[in-house]
Length: 386
Image 1 (cartoon, rainbow, N blue to C red):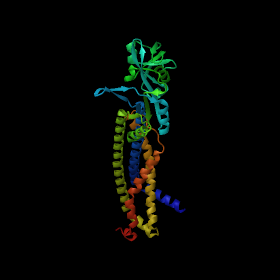
Image 2: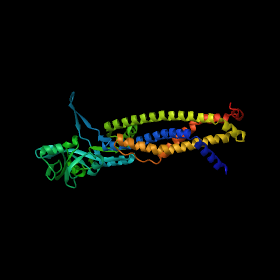
Image 3: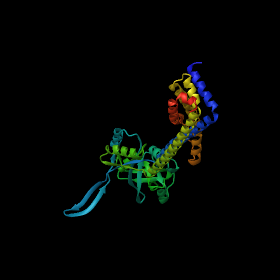
Image 4: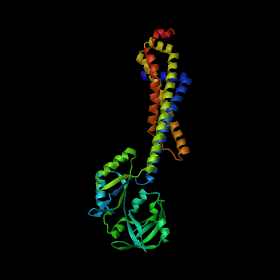
């Protein structure tokens, strides 16, 4: 029998001989690693779920032009300040976004007033493909518009008695356009009072080719990271203002951060308790095996070889406890996410490394003190039972 096989055989026989203590250590290590795995998987799943929910809130950055201000007065008289509409250049916006290197989903908007029947109504030009991606909560009755069609906000539709299939004739500064109503939308916001049509069509009717009133962006970022990206983007838009739209998202992210902190604290407490339990159990094992250790040293075993045996035992327990902890922790994570969050947790194979790492760390760290005792043990005194 070669040296490695002899060492493995000795470790297995030793652990099997002390079944009760081995089972206790495995249970402690599996419990600790399973909790770390379960909370890690739950935290990871929650973070992805919150990110998905935040996306449903739509754009988190908005770019608007600075309002032009004009002082009105004569001589020593000042009659006040009036504001003139200012627009963004669509081509410049696209160039600035490309130069910033910011990866974001964008939506271009142009808002204006058109004459309908005997009054003016507010109209917004958009790209409906972008709208469907960024504003998934919009509820539409009918169909999304194609060329020559528009959708009407529910409040506006009720005010004018409009429904899908009706034709609207709208007059603008440059020309008159006829549009077919393809459906109505309800969002619970200001959109319910607007008419939406294709952006190029509204630009042509208003005589504002290549002009935008607002740009909305959905950037994958949170907290300070989003502020930094907004500041970076602001540098590329000297004549505009980049603002955050984050009230609901910030609440969700703040709650997630607190829950993750709570999970980390609970995990730390459990790991400390598990480490103490492993240390106590291994110390008791060393005391019980002092004569055995003295005999091995008396027969020619060096301190390092005896220490290697105990290290191998701790490593094997850590490995087995980590694998068991990963399986148990995955089951616990699945139960928690289904019970609390009404969702399924993801199966994350690489978390087995986390589980085994936690278990090995606890097993070796908890065995450190007892192994130092083994290293310093005097074989003569141990054989005497001192």
